[in-house]
Image (cartoon, rainbow, N blue to C red; front, side):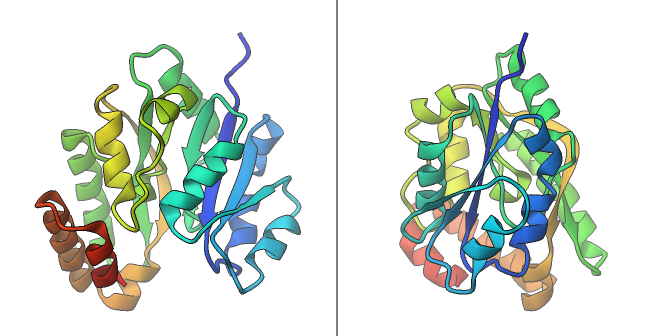
Length: 229
């Protein structure tokens, strides 16, 4: 049986420094038929030019700024039966497409995510990543850093990402949980620890927990986005 085609959507905003490496890392997936879509939210630093010149077949879609809107725009252009939403600073294993196809091929799960490893010098980042992975398995809630993937039917069935400026990954997980528990893959994706290192590990941990608690209590995502920035 022919494997389902995978479409990878990469939302970007001023990622010229990393986008070429990010897309080149996807070359093994492209060689096996994956579609790569860069969803640009109005970059002004040459991100799109770098993406198109990286040597990996890439489609570009322009969308209003906002990760949820950009990912929805990318999904609209996608032709694959499976969708993967990948941050520009997150790296997949070369065989990630096969793992996704295997995880969703037989059901009953229609979506999932990877374990994550946070790159950076502070040793505490390894502890934080381990706790993120455990929490996700327990709650069924995934974050964007864990490379969310799902069937096209599941994405359409929940209406795509909620049009909100923050916590769109949490909202999507909550919607998808109505369809199935996630496939929690032990294979790790590597995500950049640049935000953690720039703003301080403990400060970032406390901020994220504060934002998440406020979100669960009903705070408006627009208000939380201002605090996050």
